Length: 281
Image (cartoon, rainbow, N blue to C red):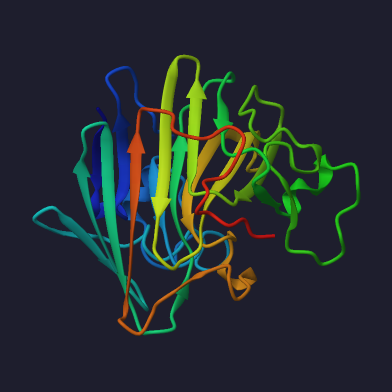
């Protein structure tokens, strides 16, 4: 069983994701978060952020985190500059399910991420299907043997060690920070005896799992440890880098619907992607 707490007044952030054994969400002191307004630089307080219509780029971490949300019954809602996002979070037998609806003009393209920063030990590992296509981004360049291709927004390898980087290992801290996007809808985190599974499903839209493995390498000059496991609609951090198939797109109905499930059971296949899922390259 998992219990969720959100903060609609301050960007709709998930402030708690608690199992009977532990709190899963990482936090850091950031009192300035309470005064944040649209246009402000992102304030990293931890928890789980709703990042939309981009993660990196402009506005940094999207247009929802700095806006107050409203609540009607079980549904929370935020009005952005070009969209409305609604979510309804309900308990399930083995965890929680969040149902989302984004309403915007047909053709509106966006990236969404459940930007979950998890409080994990140095023994933690991430399990996703072996061989899944994995995009690395330019901050990985110093960690690679081969030079970064000039002007490339990303390079593609295979999970769990794209281009030799053991991304599944989530510690101990080594002063590095690297982001990746993995072609799978499901990630299971193992931290000693504890398990957490995160899965996103959306008909007709690209889905993936973003990983932000910050092992006390960011930000400079005062880095801290933060591990992001981020179910996504889209395949890039920055909407400006998205190719034709790398972002979600609002259909003629004017709505995109998807759902996120989080459970305490590991359901991730270790060696192959789900049969209905077609890898991209």
